[in-house]
Length: 263
Image (cartoon, rainbow, N blue to C red; front, side, top):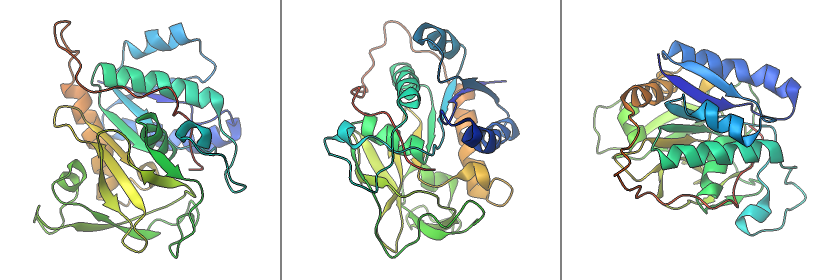
């Protein structure tokens, strides 16, 4: 059984107790073991933990990304950052990109991934679409999945890989991607307002997918949610450590990008 590393979502233990079990359950249902990385673990301990995992899951959080990480000053609507989560996320992202381990990022994790790859965020969404209707709303709004992407390969209800697919997803975020980071391509948008809902690494060899919604909450109802976790686990099962002689061609992110958003 493969092992997937997941950081504690937050320094807020109440939030962790409410949110973490859903991620663990989704991974286990897909056939993987979850290894939870404590946010207070020393760097050398995290490195030892990562040596035994084949994939990485970056979950949501109740905190926001520090706008200074993408060159902006925070506005009043931007919440506080979580420095401990940021530090652990950076270690996991560095490990994932250096060794080409598969990565699935969710909400906060997607925003963190994007900023770590030198992208930027919208600090507070103001559109006609409600992107934070509540945790219990299973189908908050549609997302249009772009053809020819990894994500479209997981969701093609029409069977036509050339046509965009439309899925309905839950939603719990007030920030979003403004500018995609290095080598990240947009794979889904909210058709009602153009908000970026998913990105993925533009590389056939390295599985890196980030979604703005919360598939861990809807695995029972959504085939797409199950497919996302299933794809992460399949890629982890196929993963092999690069040979020492192999050169790592993917550029790594700069350490200016590691916190998150409410979700």
